[in-house]
Image 1 (cartoon, rainbow, N blue to C red):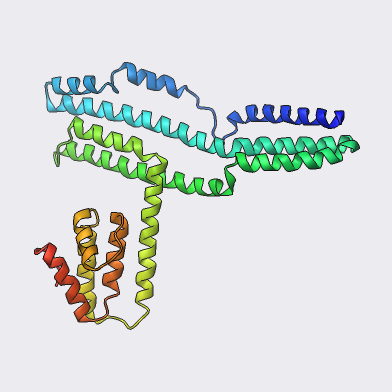
Image 2 (spheres, helix red, strand yellow; image 1 turned 180 degrees about the vertical axis):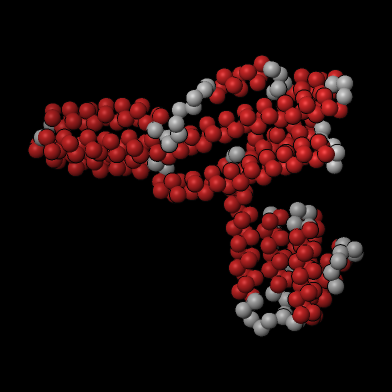
Amino acid sequence: MRFIRALTILGLAAYGLALGGCASVNGYPEPYYKPDDLIAAYTAAGYFDIGNVLKTYNAAATPEAKAAWRDEVIEAHISAANIRYRQFEAALYGEATGSNLAADWLISGYSAAGVLWSDAAKAFNALTAVTNGVKSGFGKDALYDKTLPALLTAMDANRATDLLRIRQRQKDSQTGAAPYSIQSALDDLNSYANAGSLPGALTQITANSATQKVTAELQLSRLDAPDSAAMTGRKQAIAKYFVGIKGDKSKLDALIGDFYLEPGTPVEEYARLKIYSANAKTDADVDAIVKAIKNHDPNAKVQ
């Protein structure tokens, strides 16, 4: 019993040391500079003080000076957002891998003990079972490990989309195609910072899944007798109209009610309307859809 108790204590101590050692085992190299120092420098320069940002922008004597200050603020915010996102990403990976790795080390330690001391066999079997249970719990199960890459990919996609919008608006401002005020830039920067979030990633994945579902169901519906050219043209016009209102919750709700479809989020309602119109089999079915659309939007380009 004393031996088993000693082995247990040794194992728990080893596990604690392993956890401590795993703090840096997250798949990311140490940065060659201190990211927090860079953010501190941006803070000291006043880039994150909204009052100072607006005051400096409004005090700029020329449009060129305003644009130059705006671009300075944009670069500081993007840099800071990138730093925080990479830290968040590394923490997510570390949370998924650190405890599992520690548990693996602990099991290896028990195995070595079993080899060195034959009396440890029974203790090893029992402690390995316990450790495997701990490993499963700490790892947040296999589902977490499998979904994490998908979530990170969605966050990267959201951030890239927001960054593209910022860069395009900067370019349009430089060419005179469209103004880009500091207020608009701050709104875009806030969106960019929030794009690297798990809720945003889940929303993106849900939207993509809904689109994939609609595509599959449309393809299934087309396995039946093909539509005539005239019918296809009318359905395409209706589908285009739905694309144009997919962010308009009030119009979507009205049409969902007309067709007695299940209400939901804008993404879900848009998908249901597309499926409903695609499944129309006769001219009378399409006429009913067109009539409902015209009732709510007389200028809609459907017929």
